[in-house]
Structure formats: structure tokens, C-alpha cells
Image 1 (cartoon, rainbow, N blue to C red):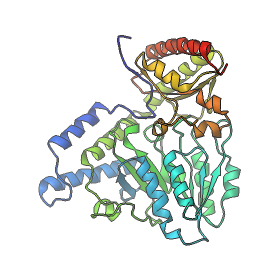
Image 2: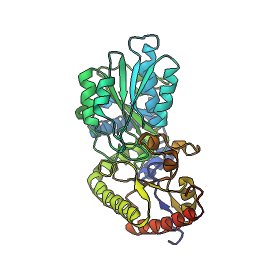
Image 3: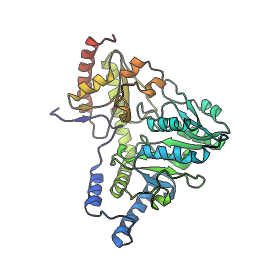
Image 4: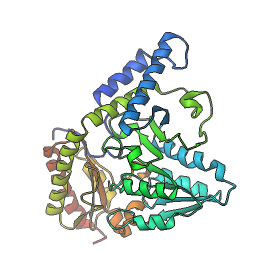
Length: 389
């Protein structure tokens, strides 16, 4: 297609909106002032940050005082787990945390760290479609449970959990509820009050914003979260460090654009997603969809192919300027099979043969047809020489 890059890896990162890039340039090149200054230029920047915080609060239906800017979703996740548990390190009466078996590595690794300090971690299993069992969750909450953390929409298979019911269970049991919303924010409506979410993690570059910026929602009304980063008085004395002004303003602009166009974008992406899934399953023998077909993000497709190595697919597709992945971008340097795909019951060789395709609103049906045409050719060639067959 005339050397056009067909980008189908939007779960890894997204292209920033033009308006976002314009804002970033403005607040790097022109309005570059430190918001902690007492002069007018700095105070204007501080006002813009406060307005940005308010805009995010309006999207989530919370107080602006509950929004804390961070560097990314990973930092936000770490802050919840390490900031919440610090006071419980020597308290064996409250040392239990519940997560799902398909959480992002930033949460899995936090839990490994906490286990070494004496915390008990329970991983709720998921079914073959990627959903946790709500009865399992209820039965595993005890008087020792501090926190339940369930990913809103999975970063690999796109499955959307029943967050409202999970929030109700946590509220009834008197347990704090965190959700990693890195893939969900900008793609789904999220009302933290309706969903009974106490903590929520977001990363700006997943919905048309810049990299290196994110935020944490923390229900400040009844939660004491210890600082993860000490320093000055920024972020209500909770996170030290000069604010990433251009990143904050760029991210919030991306959020505004995403939510102003949410219904239209979701409708288009859902149709394009289903078209791609149906065509692959119809035209490529022994191809299978991973995760639930309906309750998944509108832009997420995860397909496995028998007798194929996913890494080979990705590399050969890239020869045609097609970009996609085998799973999480944060673990792309490892040859270990995806823990998410293993958790839904796939064998190692099946997990290795999976491809993640994540769409954006600039993708076209023509691009999808070209992608599938090349995918068919590559799968056929690889199967002819596959030692797995």
C-alpha cells in the first residue's frame, strides 16, 4: 500500500492527537514556566493544571482533589499497592490482597514484592473467556483483606470485567477496590461513584495523549495513601516533583477529545473489529479468537493460529509495514508465553501462536483487507515449514 505504515498495535501506544501535539509544543516552547513560581506566568500555568484536574474529575464523576498526576499507569499501580500497604507491613491481622490472574505485570510484580514482606496474595482465576468468577471473589474476601484489584479491561485480550458487580461486592464487604483502567479509560464510560471504585490507574499514551504522564484517582474521603515519592508540596503534598505541565495539559486534551467522540468512535471500531475477526476466522483455517467476543474493548482482537509462532508472524508482517504484537508491550522482550493466555486455559504452544491486533479510528477497511491478505500468505508459508505441525 505505497509503503504506508498500517499501525495495529494501539494497546501498546497510540498516536497523539494533533491538538495534543500542538499543546505540548506550546507549553514546552512558549509557556514553559514552573507552576510553583509566584509570578503571574507561573500562576497562570498552575491555574491550567487545576482546570485540567477538574476536567478529569468531571469525566470520572469525582472531586478534583481526588486526581493525582503521575508519570504513567505503572507508577499509579505501584503507588496504590505500596502506599496503601506500608502501614500494614507488621500487622498480620490485615495483610491480604486479592487480584485476578490476568493483571498487568506492574501489579503482579508489586504483589511479588509484597509477598516477600509477609503479605498474602490471592489470585482469582478466570474462565476460558477471561472473566473472574464473582462467587470466587466473595468467598476469598476475609477479615484480613485490605484490597481487591481487578483490571477493568485486559491489555492483551480486551475482556471487560463486570466492574459494577465487583465494586458492589467490595463495598458490601468493606474492602477497598482498585482497578487498572489503563486500557479502559478513553474507550469506556467510567463513573467511579456508580462503580464503587476507590483507586483507578490511567496512562495518557493509551488514548491519544503523550507518553510519560498518567494519573491516579484516589477516593480521599476515607483513604490514607502513603507517599510513594517525597519532595516538594506538589499534588496536594502527596507526590513530590515539578509537574509535567505539557504532559498534563496534553493528556487532558486527549481525554476530552476521546470522550467527546466516544459513542461515534466506539460504533466505528466495533464494526471494524468484528469485520476483521470474522474475516480472519473465515479465511484462515485453524484460527481462533482469544477472549469473549462481545464483552471486550471495541478495538481489541486477539487471535491464535495453530502450528504458528506469534513472534514470526509479527516480524514477517512488519516486512509489509504492518505493526501488531503478540501481547503486552511491557513484556515484549521475553519469550515466555503470555500469562493471560495461559490463565484462560491455552497450552503453551497455543499461547505462543497468538497475535494481538488493536485498532484506532484512523484504520480503514482497506487496511484491514490488506493486512488479512498478507496474514493469510504468511500463515500459509509458516505452516509449510512449521516443526509444530
